[in-house]
Length: 340
Image (cartoon, rainbow, N blue to C red; front, top):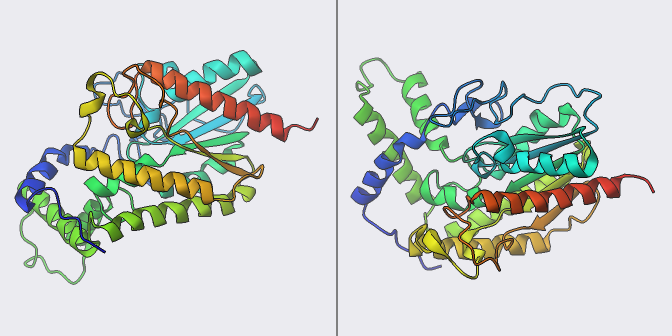
């Protein structure tokens, strides 16, 4: 297959990498077994005025043993799109909770398990190693976009957490028993950046980054993860719904700053991959009560208002529309699970 050349030179890519080096923020992406990372527990989000809960997620109180007062317990799992909002009630899960309390009663509680940059494999690990033991009634997984754009910008290995190459570099430097003290150069901050960037460049060469075959591998790994979740769902103990999140490239009319949220080459890639991810959902036999998939990518297709602030994050009006759609999904799910 034809190889689609990189957009820029190695020097330009390194400059861009150094600009984004601050993204390896230990406060928002703190190591968390086995989900790889979450927020640093009880740490204040930088400049945001709120703190992560004891589990590293954006909740006013973390999910624990379920009290009798919770007549409906919903978990929303996803990426940074679940974290946006001035206060918890302004986030998508917070808005969903407000709607469910009106529809279901004051015992409805929604917990936010959004982690910045999380991919689908991380979400599955979180569900199976932590969340399924906390007695949810419904688990909503809102994702897909990070599985597309993280390999483009960070670790190019599809289905791998975005910063895994950095963790590998650091672990190899500090804990390789074959090295003596004299073998390792003094690690300055500039040297650290160079070491991590060089590993990234090597991985990009090995994976044929941005080629056609690499793009299809991104799709293949997403499909494998989704099928794995479908197989696991019957044993989780609560219905699981995967929802492919909305994206700016599915909006028919771009308004305001929406047209300039990313480069043309990247938006074309995003458009191709969303088309392929939609096909994955269409092929998946997932219509049972334990697991189902929904395509929300075109939720804003007919909107003429400027709702996107980047390729997937949306304004407060957009968050309300997502929450309303999630509420419909929850009510339909618990209705189907309740005997007539």
